[in-house]
Amino acid sequence: MVKVLSASLVIFAVLAAWVLVERIYAGFAARHPELGPFRRNDGGCSCGSGSCERR
Image (tube, rainbow, N blue to C red; front, side):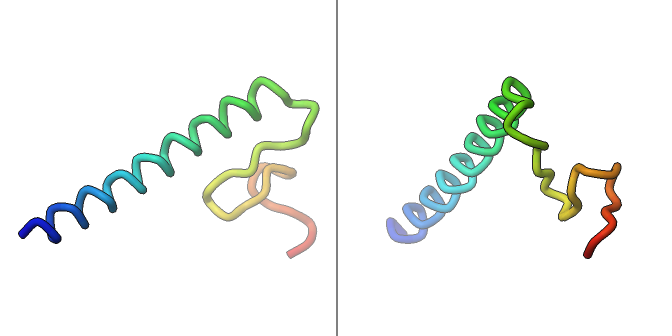
């Protein structure tokens, strides 16, 4: 039972850390636009409103 609870806690901690890093990255990109466009999570690029010339 302890293994199941600890595994669940580890998985939750990893996912929470992932969300935290994504928020930090988005905030950094918003504060420093001179470093380039923000990369979105939906798989598209941010160069042409969701559509790029090259695949």
